[in-house]
Image (cartoon, rainbow over all chains, first blue to last red; front, top):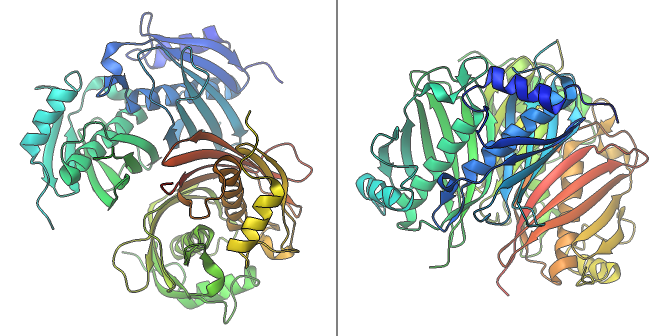
Length: 142
Length: 142
Length: 142
Length: 142
């Protein structure tokens, strides 16, 4: 497997530069592992994410999955902040309780125009996934 | 067409009761039209929604689409706050600039167990959709 | 609305030329309407399409939806037989009984690289859709 | 892991009983492995599956993925021929050449009402997947 195009620290700096309102010290997002086209990110739990029934809301999970894909894209093709999602499909499998969310993102295809990946979301401390995502990013012409 | 199961005002009160951290006076979400299984909601623009390139981020659109589906569910089957999304698929079509987002949600099937709907997202002032969503909700046994 | 890039007859000839095993006189597929980026095709009923329960099988519907998208692509961008599906998402809404299937396909975006469309499937004689499809085609560089 | 609810032979007999026009000796479909909620099926290559460009068509892949999910459902919950697909999402990753197709299907959730699974399709002899599918089946009340 090749080395990642950018390290976790480099991706963190890039995210803070281009997305300062979403990624900053204390924002609750952590890049836990960055390998080539294969990353793990964590979203720290916050009570604002709860929906009726006491479980974490769907949009919280979708946002984390999209973020994890974005990081995976950087890990594979480097500094491409204008890569954009063209499709995202999510199946919600189990209701995550009040705990951190963990997202494992892996690219299945890295083409010239499109990258396609899979993200599996877990509630910290459980082995069964809470959601499964596939997503496509369009890559600007280099 | 039958009357909606709940009016816009009743849905607004229900949302504020069950989701106070997301729906409250000044939150920027408006229920613009509530017919039976067919609703329009609006998300007021805020600079925090922008992503690199100056367009509104994907998660902002996904969250609004999911919210519009939730409102459409209430319009068709009434007070069911524990209805949950089981699947959401979004295609991003055009990049929305800095303007309000409008979501038109329509249910295509209202079964005993599942409701399936379509949401079309617009950037205020444009006629071409910025995103197209289909989504399935699971309905608790009544 | 612009005129279609190819007429129904021209698309029929192209399909027969490039896909002779699937589209030929008597194959049961008819191009009923070809407007720009907006087409209707029909699949004549055949008993082989039935699955347990006496309804038409899912793959029969998916194949027809993909075919309708392919025709819609030709109607918008002309002779591009190497356009290929990159994503297809289908929600099955109602079980179609033993009758013809009708597919209405409409493109929502026609970009340089990608075209995104929606297909609604009906069972002949019913007004409620039996399935809803969104699909993306990748367009070869011209 | 529990034993499968039905063996490969039992599933083959059930398929032949309920779907005689699709599954019969010589039909080209083989159940290569049946574990609990985790199966492998193979579709023998046939020239009729080719599309322009000499690669296997999308509908051939979608049909095989749906079939593999159906087999996985039987492996987990036994004789339920009226289980029906409610959603299928496919991403086409690479173009399969003229070779057998192999489908690995695995259920991620087996609920009372819904089962959700993932299918990865390979072209025989290649390690990179040609398509990735997620799909939901609705399970009749027992």
